[in-house]
Image (tube, rainbow, N blue to C red):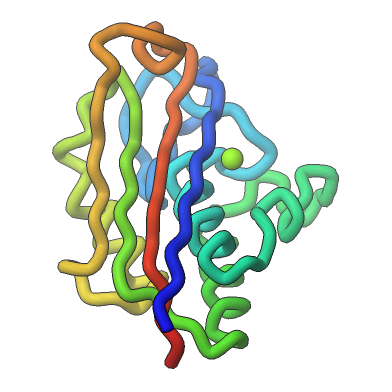
Length: 158
Ligand code: MG
């Protein structure tokens, strides 16, 4: 059996925060605001995985009212999502993440992002895609007010 999942997320860009995307700290004058490390790309991916498994969403699993997740490393949360998916005898086939950001240029960090996700997902690198796009200065991403991310995944039964 194959199951498809989709996730998306948005976080606001603010001064005085680190910019963490797929577990990689990207040098930038602003970072994403959120209860956890606000890793918008990993959040979208977690929602895709949870969606494929019909396990709800990250807001349900890791409520932002819970102090345990304050400043949380989103890759640790992803590891917990993976634990729950494996409990259902499901495993990912491949994932594809798209980050929508006007700036900074993400290309130099994409391969490290893929490696971090692949390790967490226990997938070969060629089954983990991370892409970045701008919006030609249109919308909140284009105006650099925030960054959004979309993710899709396939799960299969073990
Ligand atoms: Mg989020």
